[in-house]
Image (cartoon, rainbow, N blue to C red; front, side, top):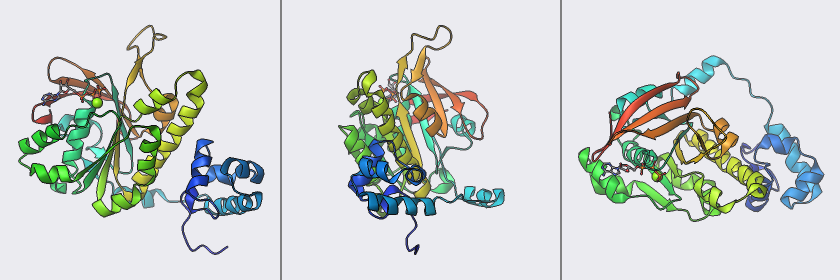
Length: 316
Ligand SMILES: Nc1ncnc2c1ncn2[C@@H]1O[C@H](COP(=O)(O)OP(=O)(O)OP(=O)(O)O)[C@@H](O)[C@H]1O
Ligand SMILES: [Mg+2]
């Protein structure tokens, strides 16, 4: 088969359009690997395309998913392109290995007022800074699912840093998502915008609230997890493809099953635990202080630090 176009996503497979891909994702078939191991009959049923077309799509998926061997040295070279966005706090930056990384998903979870959104605002400002000042000279895409995006707060942070408030706000593209469909579609269709606006940070604040509201009860749990899984996978694909950072926030729910320690756990369970590259647990302390625990990181030891959420933004 002629390989004229690299196959990276479901949509790149012959016979699979946006609609068929979306259907497959709703069945949890969200990677080329999963298509590659599907039977033509199942794939046809789950995507709505014919069995013959499904056979072709499977063959193409199999061809594109041969195991890729890379040397450690080649990966090290690639990692040199990874960018880091300063959080505004040196201690926090240091704890997570120099800032919020591109090519990765960073998750902040914690109770209300723990500072999740404040960090999101600060990163949306800081991503625009010159590289020498801890930015990536790029724009931010802010997916707001809770209606808590505050331009005034961003303006205050920009002003405190001596930046042009209007310019900073112009470089933050906000999507107010009211449903999980809108939230997911924003990520699905983001490629063009990312390239046009040079987006280097995508915020999803919060990742889980709409999923939690729409899929209630035990019966809906597997559908919720499967959709959430495909959404996160899409975000990770965007991060890899465009070398950008993803920052997601997540609420915690009380878990009365835990008798000792902190009786709260992040929403989304295992789906998120495995998907997020770096996980931060935020807790409110006295006044401006917030305690941040690094729960999971591919390269940094577990740790804890304290930041301040001040009128000027996130500080040490
Ligand atoms: N202008 C400001 N100056 C100082 N502190 C502020 C300012 N604006 C907000 N804060 C602090 O940030 C807190 C809100 O934090 P944030 O909005 O990040 O919470 P969150 O973790 O996103 O919570 P939620 O789960 O409700 O979305 C406020 O309670 C306040 O303490
Ligand atoms: Mg918030």
